[in-house]
Length: 177
Image (cartoon, rainbow, N blue to C red):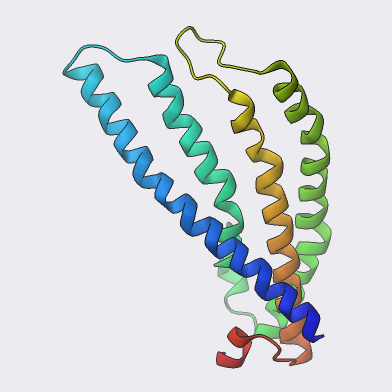
């Protein structure tokens, strides 16, 4: 059980670090949007690349930040009921949700996006808009990367829920609860 708790800690560290890293992209996104608005309204000019950069940044923030969001339990859930349940009932719900929904869906997206991303890389996909961003394949590669992170965080959530059910306190965080 100790090794499983160590795996959980490693996964949660990865989720935490990627979430913190992607949070900085929010700052960059604000700067890009402000510059785009300024250049469009004051300078009377803008480029498709600048507009595309804003939605590329948003996509990366959303995709890569998903595992961090799951780790901190800020994902969409019906908290009206969940918050009233005991920790053990919450743990059971988490395990069922992870095993029945999160892991299979993440696996399907990882598997099905491989060809999608491989084709984008093979063709050197760029923006279809004149003046748009090159290397759109990099953005598309974020899809399987994001769902690998979500899959891993789902495993960590399941292990943490098993920890709650069994009472095993193998992680530092569980010792502080």
